[in-house]
Image 1 (tube, one colour):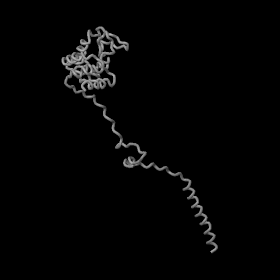
Image 2 (cartoon, helix red, strand yellow):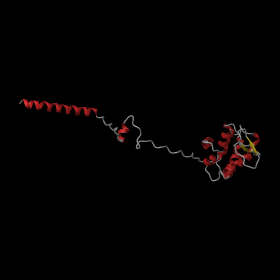
Image 3 (cartoon, one colour):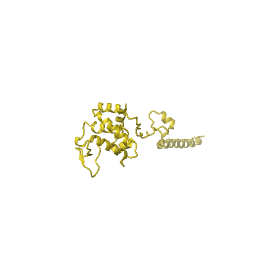
Image 4 (cartoon, helix red, strand yellow):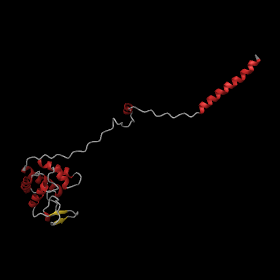
Length: 205
């Protein structure tokens, strides 16, 4: 019996030592980092801090289409009223309508350009008779404005109406184009066609 007790004590000590070493090993072992949980598209959508998923990402807006320009029937009374309203010369209405009919362009186009470029004849180089900011081709006399633009010189305002109308209908930069595209070629500044079209619409209202 005494011998059994003597053998039991070392075995107990050994077992205790093994348990102690096992606990120490487990405690000292570095924990593996857990991979972050991946949310499903539904969970991400419902989360207040979730960013857009491919399913919910906003689609890019399509580019706006050029403004359409429907040509109403020529209206002398409305054109005269517009010219009076903006401080222009209502006597020019007949010239504008005749030139538009001969060339086939919209009858509001030239008056609208004149309003944009010279406030319908209130601000322009008087020696040019050029109310439309119409550029000068090579080989003909030109007026060089203060901003460096070359303006064609016309013998009269009526002459300018006829020539610019014909150019917008038949010159190679404009022939066969819609009113919007004629204006884009006439002046390449962003928004220029839209500004002229807005004036055109106000003439017929």
